[in-house]
Image (cartoon, rainbow, N blue to C red; front, side, top):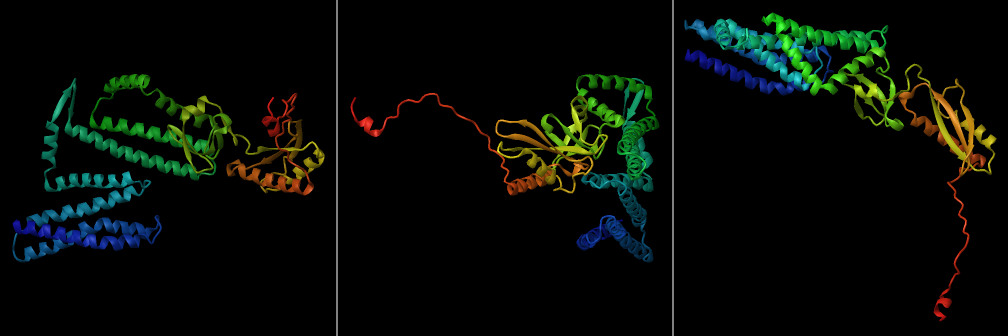
Length: 422
């Protein structure tokens, strides 16, 4: 037995060292391929199988040597299925993980889940699983008429984790299929994704509780406690959650819309996502604002592309009282051709609004059909064209002017007057 144990340790350490040596070249080779390439996935799978497979090969060789010497190899016989099951579990867990979006937390949970599944398989292979289950079941407490043991708690957590994983995977697949559909508008896609995820998560939790054997009628106490919690401390969270469903159902805001929230269009941007608690709005600076759903329900929101993407842009300009306003308005119409994004229909118009303090107030009104591409760049093109045309025609843009009238002034005293005594 000591010889077998020493051989197993030597095989494990040798395989680990070889795995450390080959890990760098394999990672470099993987980086040559794009993330969704089949060759990259195969190399990642080889990385996860390298240590158990190399250890298994060495153990099989040692087992053959022990049997050829008529020496018992019971420990090596037990190690073969354990290593084989470890390689299988790691490969299956990695394959299942590729069905989800890659995140650091998911990669960390991959090892934890893989180790947990392999521990159960290993206990079953060595025949210790019934004894461990009985020991965990004996550690129990009675809560009223219900008996809660460590084993039932572990089963409940494992089932909830498994069913939630399945629910998230199914909802993700459905959401991707809905986004790929050309016959569903964005609001309906988001609504279907939210409802399917909420329904599948609730169904997974109830199925897990029922499978463990917990009476669902005992959840009435939990429901009452949840209601009290919502009444005291979770009002805003619940309000944002319900407001998210209202936004989706009334289709007032959908992904891709250009909206502004607050006075003077303080929060202006493009709707990226509709989440359960907030809406992701990205502005022209690349900053993503997380606006709570409740704010979009209770405050005024300007949706620039609600029913019609056409948006009118106003460009004010003043001219001097010495210039001809009709000539200036004609030049404004010429400047309306400066940007290719300006629509020919509706027709741009120039208006003379008022006789202001410093000059004659004019305004050019143009239309664009793609406000999601920004308005400032169109204003810049038109303003530069107005500046060039006004310069060429000799039309001046006046400065702010104020007339100062002096009714009386004190007598002016010179230095000579100051030196002469009175």
